[in-house]
Image 1 (cartoon, protein in one colour):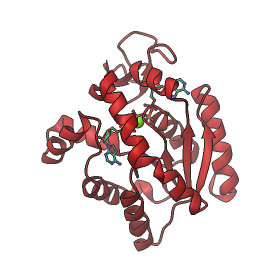
Image 2 (tube, rainbow, N blue to C red; image 1 turned 180 degrees about the vertical axis):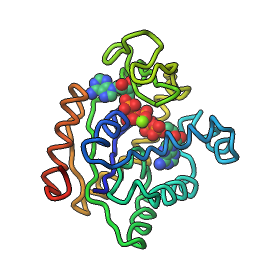
Image 3 (cartoon, protein in one colour; image 1 turned 45 degrees about the horizontal axis):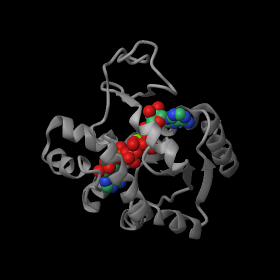
Length: 221
Ligand code: AP5
Ligand code: MG
């Protein structure tokens, strides 16, 4: 199953993609995570990406399209994938559709996670992420058992540099301007499913799972 998760910063794309990986036996592909890894490693791509990410702007389409086109050809994507944070523009959506067409595949669904703006800001400003395994926590909603330490692997938790108040606002504006048009794009192609993104992560995962299973009952356990 090939699924795109669309939603503003803080909607829970990463949280949900991580949870759905094991349900459907397909990997999460987060362009944000791939770019942050490149930044950490100090590669030329990471150095270029950082200048955009620190300001909350989008990294150029050509850069992320190449990253994803390469990633979806890895063996773990044979049964499908969950794209988290990609595509972010119509150009990216057209590019991935063309790439999938070329390798004789197609998207099965675009899941739109719908959350109020107030909740988005609250989720982002309290987010902590594990440096080692990227597990996500929230200081109020889903705190780790021990402050600053990942429950899953014992790694150190950190706050993303783009989760500062002014960068959160910039990211939300970029979403409205460049990414929200994707909702009509996928609706016109009969791929869009709106999911209520309010409530516990478990309740939202259940809503998405029910929707995806209703689409392809033969491909899931
Ligand atoms: P990216 O990493 O994709 O960030 P984003 O889209 O801004 O989204 P977030 O990761 O902030 O939010 P999320 O929806 O994943 O929410 P999460 O699950 O973490 O991109 C970062 C940057 O990289 C971009 O600004 C851009 O520069 C660049 N980039 C990436 N992709 C690109 C692309 N395709 N093109 C160009 N540039 C690109 O949840 C947030 C918090 O809420 C967590 O603390 C979590 O624990 C908590 N939470 C989650 N669900 C719930 C719930 N149900 N109830 C309570 N709390 C919850
Ligand atoms: Mg994310």
